[in-house]
Length: 487
Image (cartoon, rainbow, N blue to C red):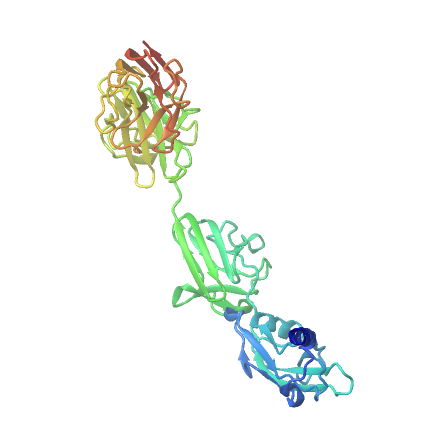
């Protein structure tokens, strides 16, 4: 009896498994009540549609019912046919296969089909027909069809190229050589470059006929554009009043424009000239300032200034009556921040270096605001191996002697195996430049060094070894890039 029940359990389990397998293999062909008597119909998400490029990713969707297989348990395949109503245009056919009951067009794709396949005119409503056919796998059921129509108004796509032309641009009114703007996303074009006082507008190509399509200024709002097809309409342009670098972004989809002005430095190179400087009175090959990468209006120069005069040359090289930066009065000391930019030889004011204020200076010239700063460069031994400890706020300076910085004193008094580095500033740790050892924990016998900026590092230091504590002399000449450490 137990065996009989067990055999029945096996039979029922196997039967259930076979039934499940059969259902899995045949499920797309199985008859449903809807497939037995459902009439094939197709509808669309819109019956009237005005396309716009701003919403090019919106969808027009067609949806259809299953149709009927008349109880044959046979699968149904679908084909969608799109055509222009009342025309012999070649239809678009999509074999969609089984179990597909919708199909969508993005507005941008549909617009392209209307213009380039069906020959529709932008701005003119066009009726298109969508017909769905349902074919039952068995030949005993006739093919079914259903159709619906949609009235669609296409748009004229915006240009894929844009140029800038006009008296303010590098090519002037030479439209054949007008600079091409850089496209990014659809309808967005950017120009970055120099403009001079004058006007500009935007052609869509470099055709020399001024009767082409242009984007010009809206008469009531300079941040908006008007599309002048074929050069029609008022030829209003944007005006530039100041030479400089500009970033212009034109959005031809939304007809907006932004203009960003970036003032450019008046000079890309400047030099120091005078007997107080290493250049002497040489304007053919004087020593140059360094232009800041972060702010190109800032120029810096560092050197030993000796008794005498100097001024700052802006070129051209060799021309004594060229462009200069000079103080407002002659023999100006190094405490004033005032500076004037002028040209010619009529005014020839200079800065004066005396025995009292001679030394190594970092000169910072701001050509945007026309201000100048003279920072006396002083060196400090910083670290627990030196006399200042880790005091960066108020350390004792090294002595300056005709271009050489000298420390003469105790190393290792507080920590016989301490370490040190040398700062060119005082205040806070990231306020200026450092003279660091070339390698970490470097011996006092090795005087190789590197210059680091702020807290960028590497933060290498000299380290006292066993028996190094005592009196030492450190000498540094920054012009010659030499250093000695002597017991």
